[in-house]
Image 1 (tube, rainbow, N blue to C red):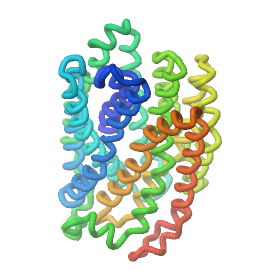
Image 2 (image 1 turned 90 degrees about the vertical axis):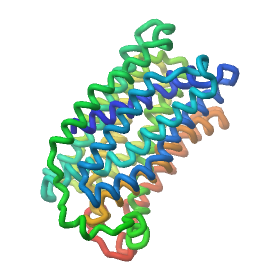
Image 3 (image 1 turned 90 degrees about the horizontal axis):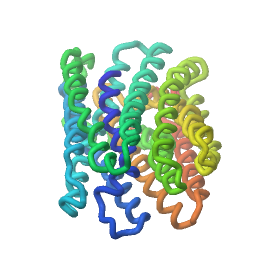
Length: 414
């Protein structure tokens, strides 16, 4: 969990800084606010393009040489890239070189994140036999993700209380530079851990695991990607477009960051509760309850942000993250883990997870901005969220027996 906290502190920091810092400091001021948002969120999305490549590389590394070997590298790379972002010159200093350097570091972040999630949940899952304890342990690992995101958001929220001039000149850099000691700690902790991967399975790992997955397990792969759409697309609609929408409606940035921070905390607290429910109710039903909550609450979420009061904005983030995201992410590791056999498990989970991240998480804020400005309201964004929910529901109930190599996942997921 500690490694996850460090990793996702870095990722959340970049996420929160995209609409609030990078849009104004790393792009030309001679363009419209809409173009500014598109460029900043487009650069944010670029990190998701690198994630499947990172998943392929680190998945193969983990399948063949051990999960902890891959996880040490993912943490080092994402932490190093985040620290360097805190040292970057802005557009007024070096012109168009500024967004290019930011893009480069964002791609490194994305590639490292692409190998992190799958490896971390497989390490946690490998410690325990199947059963309620394993499901709760996997959910707690996702609470580490939420805690890291809370800390990253909180760090930016704290420095946002500086004067606007100080915040934009130097304040925003402090949370990025503060990453360095935490990354050193995280790499040290992971170096001290024994790799729990079953090493006997490494000799059975294909030379090119990704090709073996696409050849032998195409249906589980598509199904895993589909499960990611509502969960990942939904959370980035909340955490990225939600901030941009609130900024557009003149909600103070400090309130938006506070609301997001409290919402992520509620998200992390709700995950073990969702796992407890899943152990009694079933992982598939728990996941379904989460995506239905997303569909029902996405419209009220935007209405509450529009209201602009402290209680309304905080309630918007708390309700949607705790009820619409926590039930899905709590059981998603359990669902994805069962789709692939051990010899290609790291690669399979990473590929499904990260391709889904491109199609949903990377594109959802960008699609939302386009839809909002094209239609002039968030109704189109709400319809888009409904579409993500329908796709994930179809993936949840799609028959797994159609793949080339039969798996037992259908009984666990349906």
